[in-house]
Length: 147
Image 1 (cartoon, helix red, strand yellow):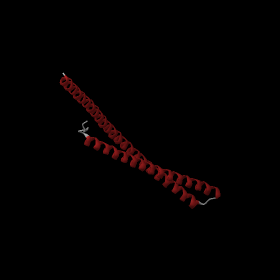
Image 2: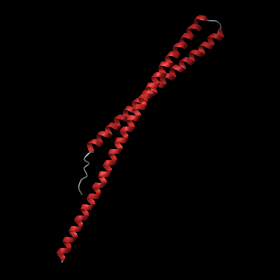
Image 3: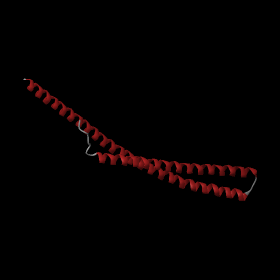
Image 4: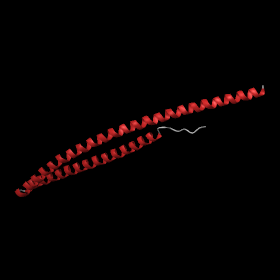
């Protein structure tokens, strides 16, 4: 039996490498999004801590300077949270773009894999036909030699 050689094997390998690269980019984008969300949660927790401290300051008495300082810290945290929310949205957009690139790469790889399978099936069919022809010729030759 002859050896199957897929003439577009190099293209298939490139498509598979591109798919792997897209997977890596997607994983990196996901990690970046997770980091940005963690930062956002940290800022929210810190703001909650400042708010709790502010409530305690108001209970204990009038410590005007500390209350004002606490209010400014809460305001800064709100600004940081807004900035961080924008970073999270940007990371989400990057993740969506990476997801789309991954889907495209996967689709292209699957297309070339199906083409390879189709070519292999055609090769098998041709090989079976060739072998059947050889068997017929051998049978005809043997039969004619006996006659």
